[in-house]
Length: 318
Ligand SMILES: [Zn+2]
View 1 (spheres, helix red, strand yellow):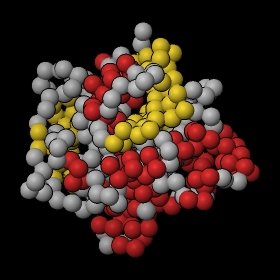
View 2: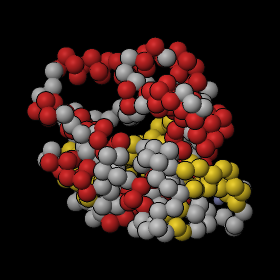
View 3: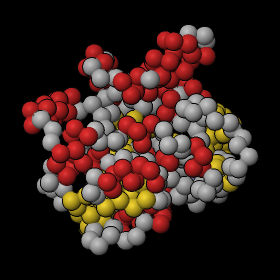
View 4: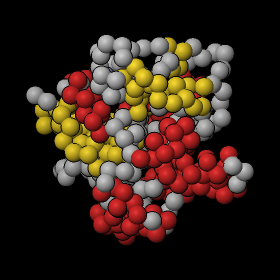
């Protein structure tokens, strides 16, 4: 354990009486930082969480400046001002046909958008290109500065300290962010206050209800200890949304195999296949055309809700 990191031990955030069962232990595979962490499951509601966990004040150690999402969401200089219209159209068509993954959104005319965990701002930048007025919240000061340099209003710091917006939002998104929050219920309640009555909330999270969670256990790529404080399934995320004033409307199982391939990479790396393992671990960042090659299998697993990531759509409960 890193000496400066204090741990806290908290009960199930859904208010269940203490009834936890240990599921597994693991360490930080992404950066190899010290510490052994445990995942427990509340036997009353089924919600899994990392417990004990680093405190909000201490967890920053596990988010170095080269943390993948901060770097991977930088907007390349060449596309900050203009990007080829043909390239943009092609991307949109490909996304429509294959519906791979991340940014599955309801059909909406543009309006006001908030991205929680906007990292270096690439999604905000894309949405401005589609006519949206955008704002962001980002925990990392360095990543927030990159997003703000694009000209967008970004609160640098945790969502808990973000000031109320001047006007409510039509769409609030958070890509792979809810599982990182210490207090997801109060954060979702806060977002509800900031949403218009007919607003949409769109979140992506790892799906801990899929077979790879049980298969790979502590070698699961998306386990991401200790950064991931909650490990949601479609059933438990619905309960968390309900408790926060939102109603789950739809679950999309993303058509990607990144989680399975990178997790296999960790297993092979451990068994001595160092180079092959390393290449497989890096697959999520460099998948490119492999998404197309693997599409039939990812489509099939997605149809059965068995890929490692899901995107959920929710409406504000009035
Ligand atoms: Zn519970």
